[in-house]
Length: 390
Image (tube, rainbow, N blue to C red; front, side, top):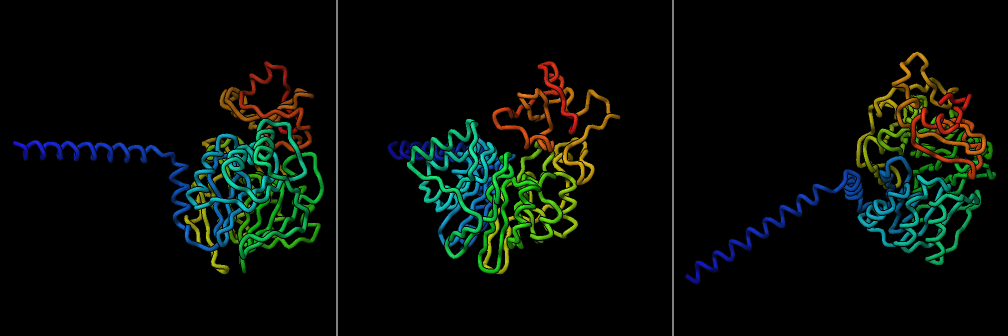
């Protein structure tokens, strides 16, 4: 009888253990795709001496670089991605960051950085000489002050070490009105391999760096401004001559990143393209000569508009903004009754596509990004820009 009770107890314990195992497996299955993508990218190259991780943060940027146990983080996605970036860093074995670089004060680059500053020991904080009155920028400064860290504004030509690798600051050369053209641009070198990362630098900043005579040649180019046609100009690409291009952008983003004509440029120079919108977090390792990747290159060559299931209306390099097809039925036209992302000028009461060439000229205090319909903006008293015709 006692033996029967003992077996009954053991059987119940077994059932409970199996139940907990099942729940645990379901819990792991419920982990987000982003987290799974991050984990796979980390595990693939965790033991390498030099690694670079283009973290999938949706429509934004975040890049982790490690060499000989020292780490640098460039950008940290938007305000909702701080914890995801924190998780990625922990999985990569990061306990301390030698450098944290906020390329420029746009929310999709520095929004999650307050979490990183708060959670990790950070030796050097590098920011451009460009402030913002945005909530995200204020939260970043609050986090820096909370940890009693100091901000350094890097000078062009400065070189910094990261283990046996190093990186050189190439820009910004002059202070511009727009956030994008104040992006910190760096070239990272590890033995015979090199990498160029340019934040959201647009053609104006690119040209200044080209004119400076800086050595831009690199094996890997992190595409400027998420593959927008405001960046990656022909002369810039010619100087870099990359074998590989990585594009950080969000799946189905309303900006249409990456743009068709930029992808055509990458294809023309024979570069292999990797994309976070299609492949999740992308990681590479270098032995100083050869590069290894956690995924194969993308072979779709689809623009962001095509991936979002809408018409790719960017025609050529001269068209720096998406143009409306007036022949289409107005009820299905992007920006009429469908929600789109627009940039408002609250001074002139005009609204623009995000990539309109007028946007960088809008003062930060008058600039507002909204996601709404064209009809709603007109009802509110805003007029469409006559350049980009949103």
